[in-house]
Image (cartoon, rainbow, N blue to C red; front, side, top):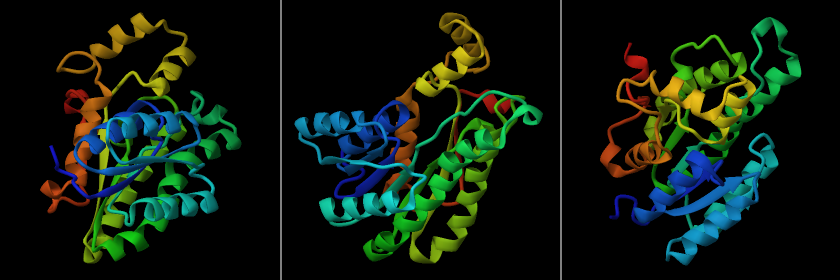
Length: 255
């Protein structure tokens, strides 16, 4: 298919999990993808896509470092000639402590990646998107940017911030034909959720059974469930969608 034919996307956290699935599906739809991550495995992901005849490249980048973010955006433009889509997917969960037991450094570490990283990547993507005549920014938030869970306070706060940032930037950049939306996944067994389960002292099978029961459609999600939502928001099929929340959670938040 070719829903993203001739578009260029920069995907943060693209080396594994949701980011890898997003890069895979976007490239299948004709998009050139710049995979951005601290994890060097992102280079293997890009090489695999290139071996399949798709346009892909890797740029090592820490999204909390403005100079590195600026260089990554420029690398995408230099490699592929333009920038049409930014997927702010990079994120960490942080330590699972109640607010009164958190250290300031533990709070700031999560906010730096999950919120400041979104700010920096958006900041530097705007100019090339304006030059391209518009674009789509897709911010990966979480169901826990909408509802509480009585755990990991910095994660909830950071994802709630991303949700509201998306709406605010949608209004700010609508005159530039730059759309900004957020995606809110339910539980998907990426490395992030695996760490969350381990920190909670649960066995994988036990945790999966418990989490499966929280999703009315049955079972936890798959990375592709989120990737196809991103493909839609990045495409011209979503040309009149901005400032919206795409909740992909198997019904978790419907209660």
